[in-house]
Length: 414
Image 1: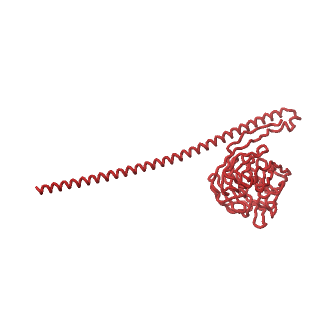
Image 2: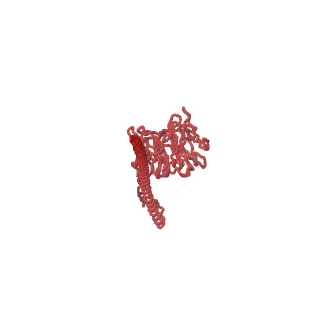
Image 3: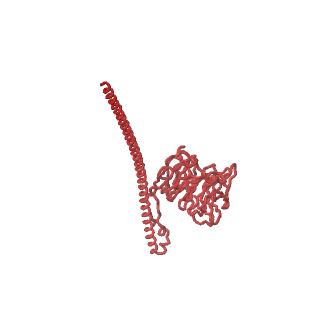
């Protein structure tokens, strides 16, 4: 009997141990299952968060695309309005021409009846956007463009930097032979005009960048100078060198160089000597301003027909334009209109962009940060690149774009 009980107890003990092992196995399976479920839930959460982030990015890109489309639509409407106004002006001119043909000879010869319509552009509307920062700070200096690239050289430096519009890529080019040279595009090549070699050493030479080497391609100017303004006509046939510093004196002389004939011509002197002036060509007018910020508001000046073939030194006088609204501005051309970028008022740099409209300076927009004595290069007829200047981090870059060209008013003298 006792043996039977011992045997039965042993069997029960084995059953209990087997049951415990089964429970342990089930418990481990449950834990593994819960762990897998937790991992699946976490993975699903991560996937949902990634999808939410991607959706947010897509929504932001869509909003930016929609904003760009709205801007393009505004530009298109402005362009259509501009074309319509020009078509109207052309029709009126055609009608006036037909009318003068039917008039008696003594009336047709009269100036009032033979004058074409006068087109008066209204003010622009511009917006500015930040671009990739320049490799170094730039205040004053010289800038030019060939349509694809812009080129900049800061004051007191021989360094030259190339900026590609489409990629916003900066590249440092071989240094100029002299400091404080004026940059310009001549015959589709980057050219450095004049410069300073230290102490009282100035140059009247021109150097052209070819295969990453500066070479003398053109005859020298008549006047040795640095800190000058240099501009070229739209066809690149003429270079105009304005003012500057020679020895210890500011210079008022203005020289014109015809690329094809390789000849220099002396133009009418500036009303007064200027060093580091800012200059731009709008149509057939050469506009020059003084860029310092010492409170002196130099009038702008116009020299007509500078883009016409010149056979003798022109004697047209400089014509004063309205006083500048601020000092320290940089002159630029947008849609063939004269504009001033930034400036200084009361010792502080300002953001304003002004345009000359009907003989008055009108504020048409603002840069993203106050700046004076900045460098400006045109990317196209309706865009400019603005670099550095006082009052802002002097390596900041932004693009100024015309977003609206307001309607034109057309008047006919009769």
